[in-house]
Image (cartoon, rainbow, N blue to C red; front, side):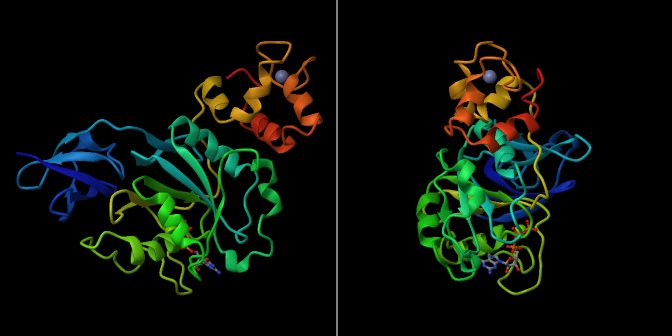
Length: 293
Ligand SMILES: Nc1nc2c(ncn2[C@@H]2O[C@H](COP(=O)(O)OP(=O)(O)OP(=O)(O)O)[C@@H](O)[C@H]2O)c(=O)[nH]1
Ligand SMILES: [Mg+2]
Ligand SMILES: [Zn+2]
């Protein structure tokens, strides 16, 4: 008899794993053949709960490229990705476009979460304009005041949700606030320092962490990024990240149009006509859409 379990967090050669039934939390040293295990992975443990005997197939896995081009696994088995942004720190240009390429390729549902509403001067910040035509259904919340958290919990129920975004936008604070209301009752309370408390001290998240929700579903907290580089192995991958742009590309004169300076480019025509935001085309070019990937 093996025990169905979940990888809650990964720390170098170790992994925190929780039994699906007993909810017991174990920190196990991993065998080398399991060095790719990630937060969110489903595994089977031996009867005494000391070793991973099997890793179940993944639905998907969220990956980024680090500054040296190495693949970094963030988490596995995700169905909704919330890109968290805030008035402070100000959103980095193209960050959302970059996340969208990874999310739409998982595939998973992308959503926008506008945190720190208590600091916001406008309901819809200006930088949101290039994304209004995409189905990201922005939700405004404040981890500090609790504004919007009920709606967020409602939208999250039954899904495996991950919060991604720049460091300091409040991902851990949001999860911390949500778990107080909507965490699974028999789940061990996160250790102090593991989640950013509402105090002033900074606790940068160093590894992704999985938390179950009452009534099914889960939240995954992830480490903040300064930038995000998706894996783009082919033009198809890039195109999946730009459904709005691709919708016009069929009408380009050349099938392999890069939407740069080719004559008869329907994408540039859509930008000129105000149908497609220029920032989206800029993002496409910045991600390599101008060359034949
Ligand atoms: N005013 C205000 N501050 C907030 C809010 N949410 C979080 N903060 C503060 O923002 C800072 C960063 O919050 P964290 O939750 O640690 O941010 P994070 O996104 O988890 O950061 P990393 O773990 O580094 O990626 C902390 O000082 C929080 O208290 C909010 O809704 N309003
Ligand atoms: Mg954090
Ligand atoms: Zn074109």
